[in-house]
Length: 244
Image (cartoon, rainbow, N blue to C red; front, side):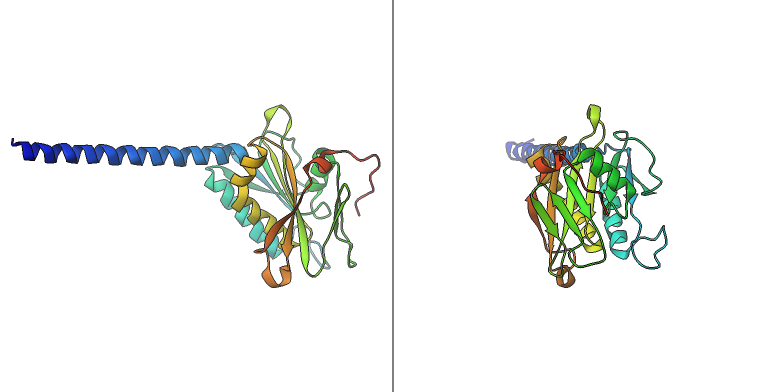
């Protein structure tokens, strides 16, 4: 074998080794990225996740009816769970009679349409008050000194992650003032979960109020953070009004 042929063979072997090492490094980075996402959502591969479904509120709505916007949001949540290699289990809000921490829970809708949401807010975020009614200005998220009212130009969503006792699986809340706001909150969570994990830790508790800008024109696409209300949401007020 001549020196030139040997040099070519050695070059091919070196290139193959370099390519294999590059592929392995990329695979390891992708795996670490997926593992960090799974850790943030408490969704190891093969686990199960509870997605709590709200009921539709409105004249003639059946107790098991889900709005079109909420159905879209549920599809996004189910897709997120499946991307983590976990299995989503959809359950009605008034049929989720189980404790916390065993399974990751994704709870959608306001406390009026979702009894499970009302229980989570009272337990984990006692500083949050959500009111709902038919009149203008009646849909309000109150946290500490902040009042977030839905109107023609904006609708708000409470997006929260609550760590459960003894290092159990977390609870995620997406409580919007409208179906569009619910969908906006879910899409924000899907798009920004890595940023949220970096800011609040992969096992922390946080509460944000998001603003859907001009939802009649832009739907759930124009979303911004209105306020980080984590500290106020965790603080139990001296007196609390009844949710209506």
